[in-house]
Image 1 (tube, rainbow, N blue to C red):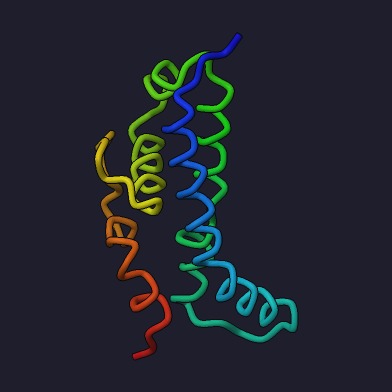
Image 2: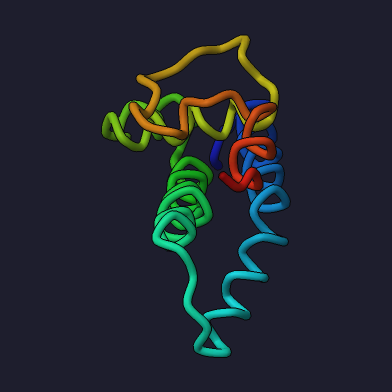
Length: 122
């Protein structure tokens, strides 16, 4: 029988939902433009490839859910994956249990500032 830290997993699941909800509208608009063969800016392409692409976060969450314990699963993660766990925690508003290194890019910007930065046009 698997023993998990349900609170830790719940926090990460909440973080994934927050990130998913955050990118949903803009991602749909950009994907619709691409489907209509309309060009999008290089910044929007990069945003779709990185910030809006949550596949890695989902895979890390699944790996932790499948592990025999949260701690064991976390110990097996590489530094990039631990950074994704930190990103999910931050998105969920949980800064009480710092883990791993932060990503050294725009992802280290506090979630509170994301809407201002991602929807602002020059």
